[in-house]
Length: 111
Length: 138
Image 1 (tube, chains in turn red, green):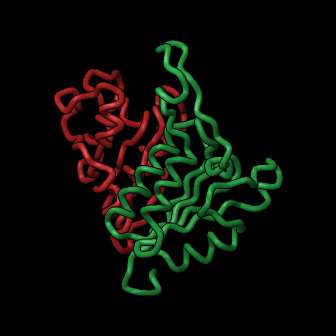
Image 2: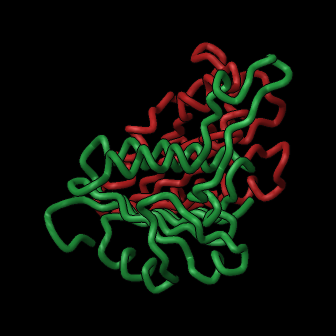
């Protein structure tokens, strides 16, 4: 089992290929890997409650072992407060992201 | 993999200044890593070689009615200069601008700190670092 850190910076309303990245997270988790899916920049937009066909909610439902995080700086920039986040998404700081990046053996992928 | 007990994070970045939020995120990551005592290597290629251009000028904001001094526009070069001050030795910030990309863009007049290199530096760093994060273009 490997430890994956997937960083999603893209808004799926803007980029069609985001859906593949969500699928990668789901498939990696399904194969028994430990997966953290960290939303940054416009990647945090679908973490807002009420988004139709939210890929974030789908990921949380279909791959509950995936840890979904959202960068607090990116959330503040986009006026998304903690109470506006879908259930299952936790806020993380850039310090948390760095800690994950320098955890030995972590495979980090940016999209 | 690390060559010593210290931790090192390598990042490859190709976004030109003032185009995407990725630049801000990367500089935040570099800042956080240095604050934590983690060495950082940055391989800037393609448009990212312009991040460290020395001549970046501040500008006024006519919407707010501020002049360049009041506006104190945060240029990428100023940000990176501050990171170099933070990462002088331990932890250390090493920054390579891809020479081919620099020559293509005539973008070789840098702030103090960056050095010229090539993909071989990224490979070497990757082999020696705790982790490597490669960020492609949007």
